Image 1 (cartoon, one colour):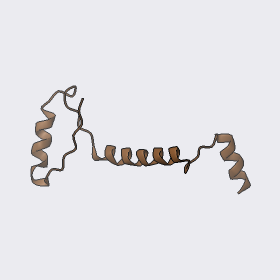
Image 2 (cartoon, one colour):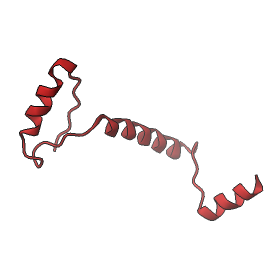
Image 3 (cartoon, helix red, strand yellow):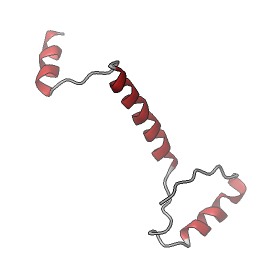
Image 4 (tube, helix red, strand yellow):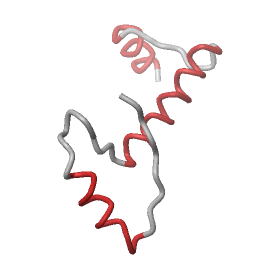
Length: 69
């Protein structure tokens, strides 16, 4: 399945959404704008993990460090 991102004027938004909803959900899936925001945040986190800027801790390590504070 291909993905497109559209910016639609509010005057025609309802018409565009109506048209898209006429398709079977197997053919067209409407993805909310929140999806793109979350995806961008996750992509940024992945970059930080790959660069070593962000590190993971086990629950035990976290609890130990939290107790030290």
